[in-house]
Length: 83
Image 1 (cartoon, rainbow, N blue to C red):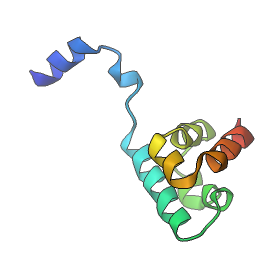
Image 2 (image 1 turned 30 degrees about the vertical axis):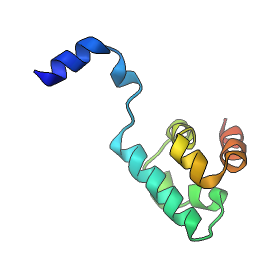
Image 3 (image 1 turned 90 degrees about the horizontal axis):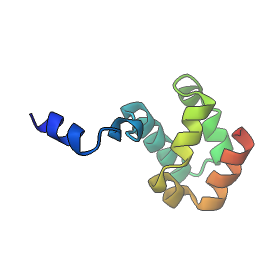
Image 4 (image 1 turned 90 degrees about the vertical axis):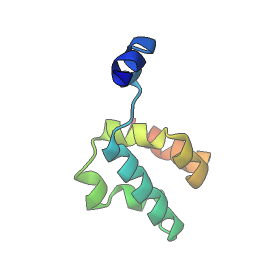
């Protein structure tokens, strides 16, 4: 019943929900960046390529925690490159 009542409060919440896949990809990008790898190299990894389309990568690059971890200039440049 809790799900139905939360649906009634915001019937379009599913449009803004992130998938678990995007959360895992985001965590992978942050972890690899902390190891010293550049963002462009990380995004060319088979792990990322096999799991995400360019549109999904753009959504991941818009996540606030990813922008905070990598820096706004890096994520903005990569997002612009993929658009």
